[in-house]
Image (cartoon, rainbow over all chains, first blue to last red; front, side, top):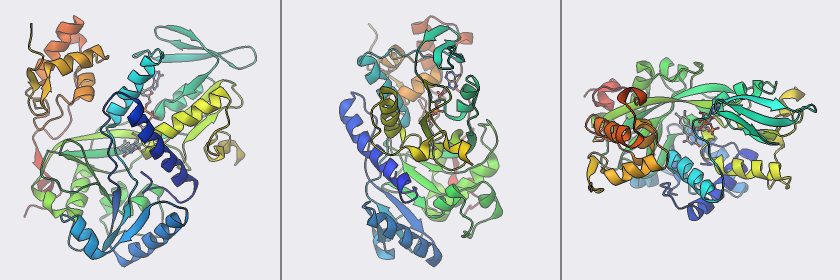
Length: 342
Length: 90
Ligand SMILES: Cc1cc2nc3c(=O)[nH]c(=O)nc-3n(C[C@H](O)[C@H](O)[C@H](O)COP(=O)(O)OP(=O)(O)OC[C@H]3O[C@@H](n4cnc5c(N)ncnc54)[C@H](O)[C@@H]3O)c2cc1C
Ligand code: FES
């Protein structure tokens, strides 16, 4: 989705990835449940409206398909949202897919094209030659000789980085999700409270009217309908190491925020809660980059909450780097070297 | 011959044939089958089908129960409404 991106390069990158998704859907022989229904931001206050209007103006000037929706329009279009919502932003190009199907579909397609995939092989070490370039990858089931290796280990990328002696500044940022039972359609597309952007980027010049718990756990309502007639409710953000247990405080906060925007959910069941770890980079940009000091070592990690959406463009750029082609987008902002400069 | 169209997961309507295909595609445990087919993701959260899926995995992969990694248990134990969870019970 481009909805939660900052204007400029951030949006451009996500937009390119959206185009690549369409090519992938055509190219692979696997249903990844891809739909392009757009997304909507819900606006709660005049102050949010002002911030949103400026944001949309800037994005439209850059050529992205977004627009403001007034009170009447948004309530006509999404009848289950709370009565006091004063308007919204529609982002027409946003899409969704089943991320696990996406991973399986891509892997099977790669296999068909000759790739060999080794599952359940843990990488234990990476060996370098006398010049300091990549020589081999050591797994728990044998050694693989190679001149190029991509560290795409997500929140574990720092551990793999250590194997070649580099420090990668990625941290796990936990997020929890509530899964609802399958039920009547509550909303047509992804619906997000505008305050989500503030939670994501930690903007301080703006405060939502929420309880201290909601603030503390970075909770902001994200509604995501699935192609199986149920929906997911997010989102939370907390730095708790590699802990993927759910907590009752956050489950409560998510439910509280969900019914604030969708009162109809009071009577809908939650069937599951789970937690995952986002690979967080301090400046909110991923690392998609070669590592100068270790020739043959590449990093594609640190996408925080955008690793599925940005997956296609990341794969494209990394493949262009490895084959020595010119990258189709400027990659400066995502370089590993940026962390050394300051 | 077994009936490949036999429904194993009732909530998500997943057939035996689909589960066998998932194992062929590389699933090695209940979680692997679940991620590929949705078996176990339904409203009963696998309480009806998980045992069956486990049995199929054991048979296809020639493994014992102890070799199979169980799917992690996640709350809530029973479905609970957003209203009760979010503290709004009217
Ligand atoms: C609650 C939540 C909601 C999210 N929602 C969205 C969303 O709506 N849209 C979106 O785009 N993104 C979303 N994300 C983010 C997205 O899930 C991540 O950015 C993405 O999964 C990162 O992908 P990755 O391939 O970099 O890492 P991962 O998917 O974590 O993959 C890393 C892999 O490396 C393997 N590995 C690690 N160490 C080793 C080793 N030593 N040897 C072998 N293998 C190893 C791991 O087993 C793992 O399979 C969400 C995340 C969370 C937690
Ligand atoms: S029967 Fe499979 S989830 Fe209920």
